[in-house]
Length: 120
Image (cartoon, rainbow, N blue to C red; front, side, top):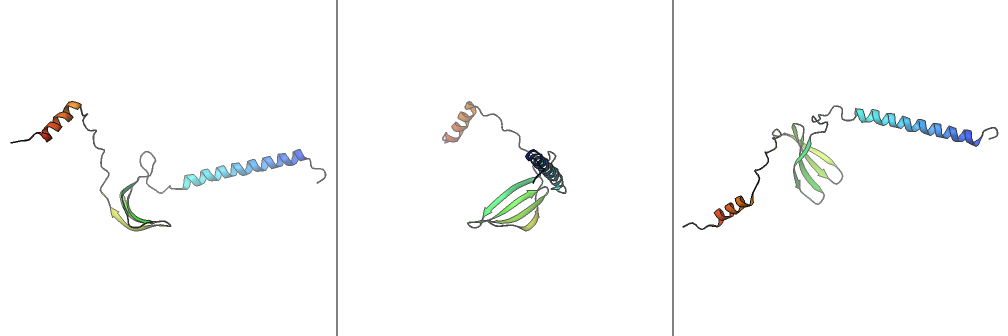
């Protein structure tokens, strides 16, 4: 191509590539904002999903009971798919149990004596 310098072509390439990268970043941000907008989130911004129980029923198949917010979902899981079997009611989340009292060596020894002493 007579009349076009290599520097001009290189500049055009860099500007075009920069435009494409910026466009991709903007589209990714818009898509990320729209995904999950209708779902319930915990106060910390995280989704409330918790696997309550899992039962293996074959080599590559299992059944899961999952808490999703305030609903229970019974899911069938195979190597290639996840299927909703039934929606169930689950009890509300329990508050975390208080930390157990600190165990000392003397209390462990006393408990061992109570368990091992023969009573007449």
